[in-house]
Length: 316
Image (cartoon, rainbow, N blue to C red):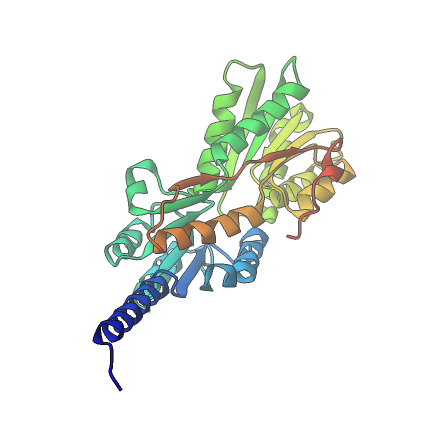
């Protein structure tokens, strides 16, 4: 039987080409080993964010492993170092102290690991070390909280501010945005203190101290997070102070429940599902060499008693 060598060579060449294409596609779409290192898994937002990552990981061909930072910068730094040694492809990072983790982030960058900041970003001078940021703009969240208070008190009011975990990106930005937006208004911040951690008990304790100092002069409270506002509300209730205008940020079940109950006036809500899924989507694009946005801001919603039922009830 006569063999047509041109046809044979053509078939071989085609098979080689197909195999090459398959190899490239497989490399680009390989299963990614992703670490989620968060300040604390006891924080409901962080735990729910991880749950969403787990639910959507297969969609982006990933395996996501959570590491609990326990509100301890040394634990978070050690987790980053361990992930470098274990050959993770990407790290999703939400640290308790954005400055303390910088040396470890630098090591991850040098190791070729994709670094995605989740809800908390590095300070501007170190942002070249991370590849991705996904989250809300916490400066705008603080601004929206201020705008809600200004709108409710057009003739001015005295306000106390209870900050989140001192040194965290969210605490810094929410405070800065709030302060800047109040400039030129008749709103006076008579007391401000940040907490050591995102602790509702500590928020309650700080509020109690401010009530002792300022009493019924307090017309409004801005707390950096909904569950912290729960502590503030309890302190006001125990002191027999009613009708205080309370604004907080997050959009968790507690915040929505308090808005519905009338104890929290405004909830500046962030969408944890969108933040989590967007993080996976952008990491996948970066790993595959596709174009992606380095900074991804997820819009915030202002939730009040008038519109709370128009929003999906949060699962965290």
